[in-house]
Image 1 (tube, rainbow, N blue to C red):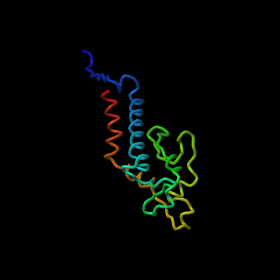
Image 2: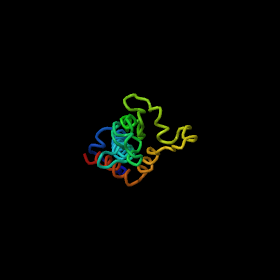
Image 3: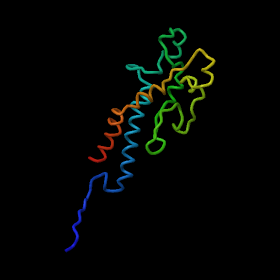
Image 4: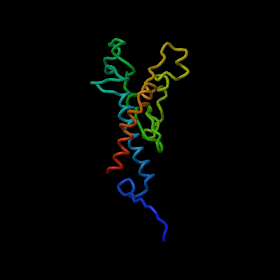
Length: 156
């Protein structure tokens, strides 16, 4: 009598090709959504919900009170902020780095508060990237973005 065997056949969009490759692609897609929506958007904000770089236009900047502005004078740093997946399962929110081949703005570290110049200055930085990282380091957000992308890969 032949030995008894059990065979599992899995099919569907995730398993039709290379399952591990499809899983990594789904993870990267969810990670990019996370760093774009919760990361760079949290730093940039908009007129309705300003987060960390806000203030009046340059023509009104010097006329405004310090409480009416926060980290935005000409908007150059704001224009350089972006998010990217730099390799499998690794994403960044940065001020120019990995964004269309641009380098980080030279003063981004000072505005963040991690430059050696901050130690001897009264300006200690905004910590906007640190705050954003702490916000994104949340299992609920991971499940919402990355988990949803993986679930979509299974269901598609």
